Image (tube, rainbow, N blue to C red; front, side):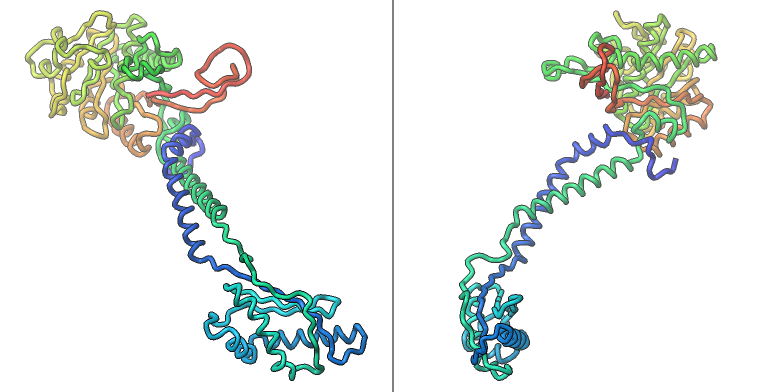
Length: 476
């Protein structure tokens, strides 16, 4: 229950949805990474230009022996390397280049080409002209450094230095800044995935029993209200009801499975027939679940009364598209102004009876605690085989708690990846501490990537053909 990382609660669909929902953040961080990297590289970039010269070094009194020429060349190279940064060279550079050369910070190298008497001189710095002139200044200082040599030498220019036209370290910020931006985007993507995985909400069916340690009453998969563009524009389907001809069998079977478990509880205790449907927060689909359970029971020939006890935000009349003028408000019944016969709505074509409000009310907690509410529930129990009570969310108001000891059973509708696990557990504990039997959690609006071995396609489950199919079940 206190696990930091629960493998059974990892859901690929939730992770993908979270990443896609925040893809703008990944793109923004990536763009910022590109801009920052480009700016830093541009500000810190220092071009380096190199000039190179090659000289043939021979003793002034040539003996004609190659080995002697190499020995003299080695001696000259060693001396040059010793004094390249000494004052004798510095003074000569000051004469030839002036004191404007930045700290005389050029990199100077003299080396002997292996197996020859060829001396290679290389100078690198930020200014190509300074690099070029430095080689000449060093060679012009030969008279000052010749005293360091055991034997005088002469130089024949084999390769003259030239002014470099392009830097050695070409400035290529585009590729590197794009690489940095991509790295930033990938890090952001990784963080989003980790946050999605670690978010403590109920994401999988396994988590209902493993994490919540309670009964998994059933799963209701997501169902699109309007599948066509025309339907989306006109919003022809206002609620998801199993009586609608366009509802899929998957959704209907999900509701029927829950109904079967409710019937089992009723058969075990025939005198107990009131079922409270509640949730932790708003928008978890409890009213839709309550209505569909009532309709499913009615289709089996049961006498069902639905009490819309969410008097703050009544939803029953909206789902069934009942005009307000046809509704006798439930508040009048609880105030003792009318009887139950007047409050019960028995609409044509609607297989259940409903007690509901036509508008929102305040101070509803007093109604829930009243003797009139208890009397309403008791009368409905006598009139119907099943009484389904839709209550407000438990985390928002105490109306549902006020009804706990007045009903026989309670179930909690939990929307996938919506309410925090700690809040769900708290609501379950409240129900279990009452005299009402908690029969389990309905996992609602369940969406998941799933492989089905019946058909090779992308979409909802079908039973024909063979192969595999990737299904996405979605719902509200």
